[in-house]
Amino acid sequence: MIAMQMKNALIALSLALLLLVSCAPKAKETPQQVVPVQEPPKAVGVATEQVVTDIGSSVSEVDTLEAELDTSSLDELDADLAELDKLDFG
Image 1 (cartoon, helix red, strand yellow):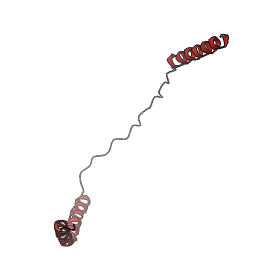
Image 2 (cartoon, rainbow, N blue to C red; image 1 turned 90 degrees about the vertical axis):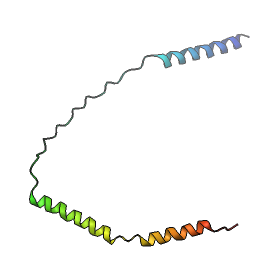
Image 3 (tube, rainbow, N blue to C red; image 1 turned 30 degrees about the vertical axis):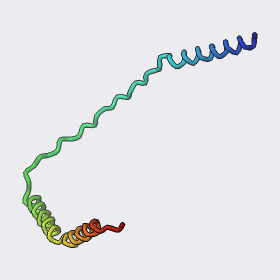
C-alpha cells in the first residue's frame, strides 16, 4: 500500500516538474542588428550609340532565330496524336 502511494507521489512530482519546466519563461534571444550595406548610387547616363546598336542587333538576332524555328512538324505530331485519341482499342 505504501509502495503504491510512493509510486503515485513520484508520478505526481514528475508531472509537476514537467509542467514547471514547460511553463517556465524562456530566455529571449536578442537578434543581432543587421546594418544594411549602402550601395553607391548608380550612374544614370545617356544611352550611347553603341548601346543602341547592340540592342538593335539583339532584336535582329531574335527575329532571325524566330524565323528559323519551324513548328510545322509539331503541328503534324499534334494531328497524329489527335487521330490516335479517336481510335478505339477496346
